[in-house]
Length: 152
Image (tube, rainbow, N blue to C red; front, top):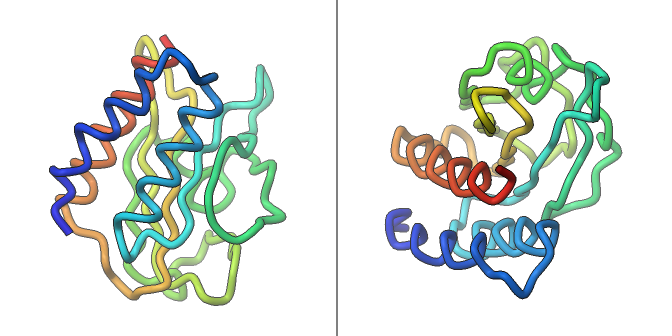
């Protein structure tokens, strides 16, 4: 899968003036889940107002009970605090991990910044062990930049 080839469709989806922000974000999730074989759950979490927690936004994949995640808990909660990408090649080897599904083997989370503030993140779960490369990180940083422009 050439992730570079998905950049133009991501940009088109995020700039679609005929859709709400939520619809655009959901369309991005649908595109990534459909086009990247090892992206098995794709979703956005956003800071929940002034609370020290994340709230689940648009996503594609199996339903999750994790609609609210406290800062510091699990991979997403850690990214909310660290402001850094977090790649987990094997979730079983991770201590502070919140399991969404027994089929998930790996996870990548990349923060979204608006005006220098970490306002959310894209979260990808994979049912494949250790699938994420630096190319995935760079691509998801691009996706987060486009989402940031949409939310600015």
